[in-house]
Amino acid sequence: MPNITIYIPTEQMPLDEGLADLSSDCTKLCVRVLAAALENVHVIFVGVRHGRGHPVFAEVQYRLETFRTSAVMNLFMEDLENAIARCTGLKARIRCFGYGASNICARN
Image 1 (cartoon, helix red, strand yellow):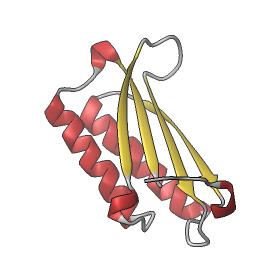
Image 2 (image 1 turned 90 degrees about the vertical axis):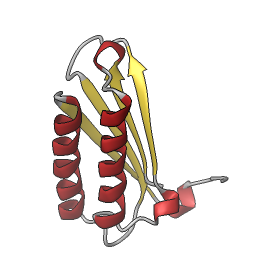
Image 3 (image 1 turned 120 degrees about the vertical axis):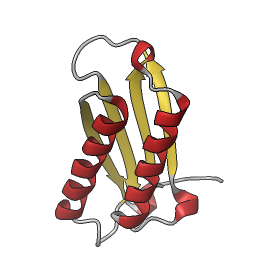
């Protein structure tokens, strides 16, 4: 953790270079702002058929830590929103979900 999944309408999906830039930005945010270990960061892009709402939906799952305060998460979301807009030209809805270590079962 953290895991970032970004849902983008298939017809508006950026080219590989744009996705690589966004992936890099997401990774840097996780490492620098959330203090995540690089090997624990996952970024996934999913092409979708858009129905309603903002054209991009970003879902962030992360491990709760005392240093990941509301202020830290707000900074993270602001920077993530800016990165998505810069790399896709689209407005994103962002939702972050924190999980306590005792509530996470994981492998690999």
